[in-house]
Image (cartoon, rainbow, N blue to C red; front, top):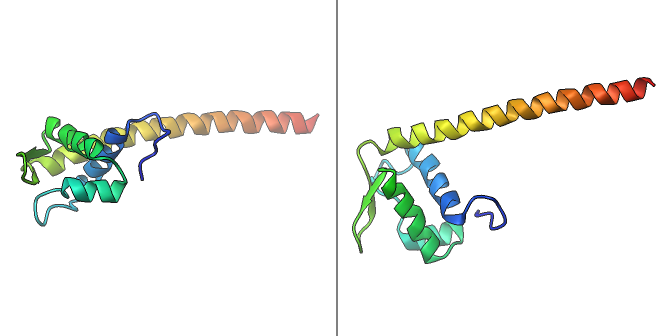
Length: 116
């Protein structure tokens, strides 16, 4: 699931996906994210990448963790995750609008060339 050739680092890809999963309430039942071993297996990453992804979630205030224990969701994890994913969605919408504009321009150019 991690794109090793992409612009975004592996740990951020994992952290962003976990954030999206938190936003949907996927981990609400038990209030914790999967263990590092499960994250490694699920995403196909190293222990260092899994640990860094959890560290990023901890830095953003979505989880709290203690060495040797699980990483638990904070009381406002879902709202923080929802806000974070909304920001990414807004960026994607802006990029999509830009691509649509470029596509319209290309379509007009092609029509002009075909009319000659």
